[in-house]
Length: 486
Image 1: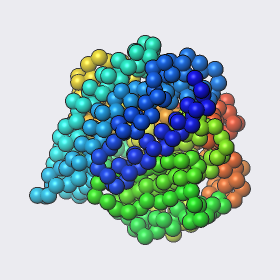
Image 2: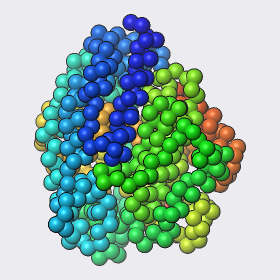
Image 3: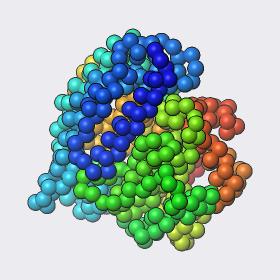
Image 4: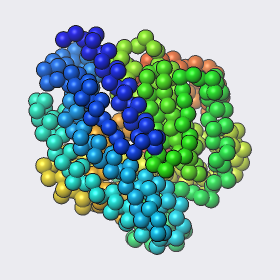
């Protein structure tokens, strides 16, 4: 195999694939057409090529290429199902107030709906629409299990662990510990917030929490018209003029089928990076744009001469850590005061910190759920298990219909969990060296750019070591959550 030619073709493939995801997610097209791209680059995933790459993982670069080839081969085999599911999601609507509401806008509408009866009605309608592609999702899941076995792995979990350098069992143990340590303060705080809102805790659903977390009462702190200015000023503080970054493009236009979830599309790293957001009001807009800006700046500052694998592949826990570093600024009272003029934000900070506990508990449950689901031959039986595990962790009623929609390939939930651990370590390092206001320190920016330039050359564990820590540690997360509870 000519490895140099393979890498050249792989970079072109990833660039085209990311561009397709960008156009689909940005609402520029409703159909998702991965099949054409896979077909035109089918040589990348020829069985003998994939087997050769998987058999030689002797260097970090080759390991990343093996992971790319294996999951690329699986996705190539599943591409028609992936296209069907993505297209149906983009075209689906929920009948609401006598009008078809785009399914992708439903989560925003649920969080904005103040009337609880109407909110639950919309939640139920949305869940029914979400469930429509579940037969295709079940088939896709089963086939991914078969394909993992076809590559010589005992199961899909083993494939993800060995190629992705993930110890999922150990991470699950750590997250179960975090769930146990935070259970009492979480249950107490969730019950209090629901009670204060006039919602019986025993009957509360995730839609109720979506409304409470939306925090309409804090919209005055987070005005829409200051969103981009806050981003620009934050980046200026660390020496980046985002308006002059020719390789970073912002897509903030509102389109009917645009994804409500902000995302970053690194089409060509570092030459063309898109930051996509659909503002809908409130603190989520600020968290989302700062999060995706962390991704975008990471990719935009990656060394252009770095190997393809380090620019596009690697452990996504690393780029997620940079993203969390910036999204967590909206929990920094100094940043809130300086960027938004917020002087009375204690109630908001309380909500934001509790929301952090919620999301970490949710992802702890998600990891356990996915470990069980990915080892099962009967995914259709997991609806109640999904509702049970998430309901116990969150103390809310969870829609069982979402049991396959709420599932990412290759245990991406583990990447998030590891990223949260790295983020705490990185933030503490920045605060030690540059102060709590590191975001306004050009030297901190130089330090971050030195890290960003590496792309994803290192794993999360290796990043922890570079930051001066012995290992990734969930203990620091527990400390922060327990210290800010109530």
